[in-house]
Image 1 (spheres, rainbow, N blue to C red):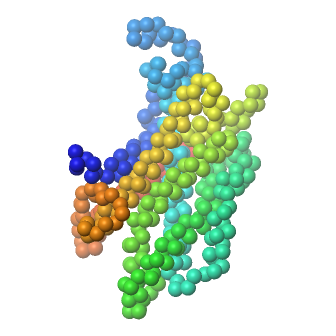
Image 2 (image 1 turned 30 degrees about the vertical axis):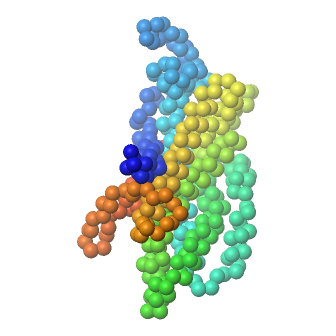
Image 3 (image 1 turned 135 degrees about the vertical axis):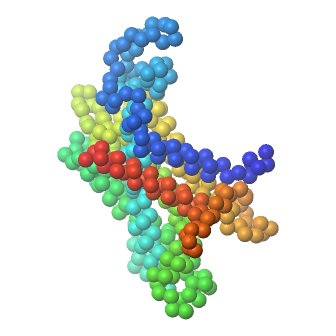
Length: 359
């Protein structure tokens, strides 16, 4: 029992949940029970030995062929979730990865200088107050509803604008952490011995920040998914919004989860499952990344706690197995490296599938 209490459960649970969501994003269409254009008409089925009339909207958990039910038009909700997962997860990971690469590199170099740039600090402080959601709304609203652009083009526009707007905050965070490392004695010694800036950054500073950057990367995914959800409430769906009149309805062109939530928000007063199914999927995906970030934080905190008799103010958790293996004389395989490798591999596969689907 004590061993279970000491286990880093957020890391284990979060990692496997995130791995599951990425697998769904990659293989979702192959897991679907029906084609995306399959539509339920009025049918007569035998369920548990009883004749039942099946008509849209099919309630969730009532018909085995449609375990999560259908929308009011008869389209299977589970199928739409599986087809839309690659857009929800892929866009979030792509945006967060681009922000971390650009923001990390710029922040490392900006923080490596001895003197701080007052101009850049002023830019960081001013940009930090810019409401990202409002700017995204006014930029995307004219081009997203009944768009003339392709879905892949709209996705690239969102990734670019989102990265530009939130990049200064990422740079500021990395720069401040870098400034703290630069003040360390070993960095000053390396500088005195003639180490150039590139060597200082990639041999002395970056190794001290890589765990924190990994946690930031996971939390950036959460932030992007949250913004996508906010835009979805206002009918701005990733990949395009189809607006129909008489009556006025909004439909997602890609079936990404925030779009499914936005197009079914009117069902909060009836047929709640049509809204709750995609909402539960998005909340669970976001919570999985939050759990992973918390678990990584606990793991790295425990890994660096070299002297257990010195209190650190945090509860110690049992770290992942130390499966360090020397390959040659320089490369070591650690849990953090394995996690990052899995992320990058699955991200690359998911983006290839997204591009192949929308081009």
